[in-house]
Length: 67
Image 1: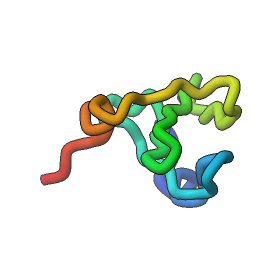
Image 2 (image 1 turned 60 degrees about the vertical axis):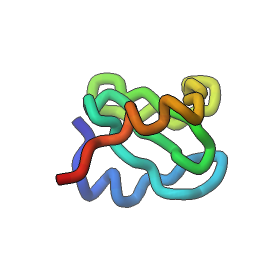
Image 3 (image 1 turned 180 degrees about the vertical axis):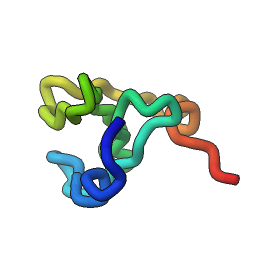
Image 4 (image 1 turned 90 degrees about the horizontal axis):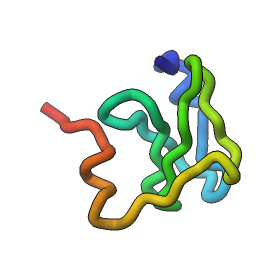
């Protein structure tokens, strides 16, 4: 799991926007770029080569639910 303070400092390498932790905690999501970056052994892989594309319709499934 990525530390909350670390997460607050990380941005998407493509858009420079904030990243959101996925609902299952295994990826960091760039809503602006529609990309998911994996977290391996607690380390975010913020390389575009490591990212996977997220379809518009799947975006909500990957984000944590509020409330």
